[in-house]
Image 1 (cartoon, rainbow, N blue to C red):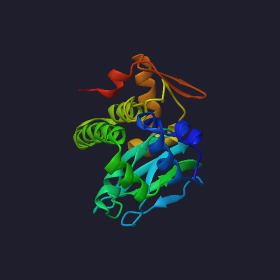
Image 2 (cartoon, rainbow, N blue to C red):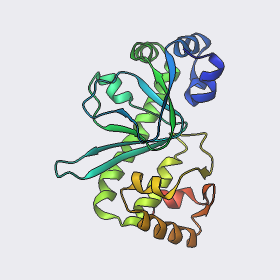
Image 3 (tube, rainbow, N blue to C red):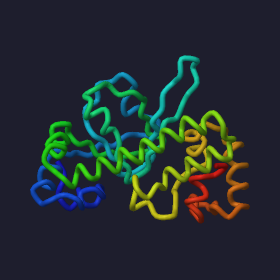
Amino acid sequence: MITAERLREIAFWSAELTEEEIERARRGMTEKAFAKGAYICHKGDKFDPWLGVVSGLVRLGTVSQKGKSVTLAGMRAGGWFGEGSVLKKEARQYDLVALRDAKLALMASATFFWLFENSAGFNRFLVTQFNERIGQFIALVEFDRSLDATAKVARNIAWLCNPVLVPRAGNHLDITQEEIGLISGVSRQAVNAALQTLEQKKLLRVGHGGIAILDLDKLSHYED
């Protein structure tokens, strides 16, 4: 288990909880480290916890029937995910891989369901989370078929900085070109060209420490 102070530090949604709910949440949560390249779970695994990224970067993806690797989402520190699988008590529908050394928070399913059944604040958070994710995955289906590499890079960078899903993200993204390529599903060379284009359009600025977001809205709707 973790402390109440640690819960408030790593889980932005805990601000919605009462003191009793925070106590239940922190007693049902642990943290676990994963090395770069490690599989956190495989598609088809019965993996019960609800997950939050404390540090690092992880990729949700799958492999199509034709053998194509498909990225569903990238998750940076501050993001929480997997509530659908927990609520439906189903096997995971994706592979989950650490793209760099990462630490995850794992909430026991019993604790998740207690909050779901007893906390109005937690349910407000879940409704907002579901609504934002639905929009994200609808856009994924649309742009995977129609947008070029630059637009894919732009939108995936924007998703990692989504202020609803990761409200503490700020306007700086600590990420490498290799990681952007893995999340966007394009080559590193295409990522480099896309970043140059986006920088010329003054939508972002590339630096040694990552990427500074200059216009999140235009990145989110690039090539609409």
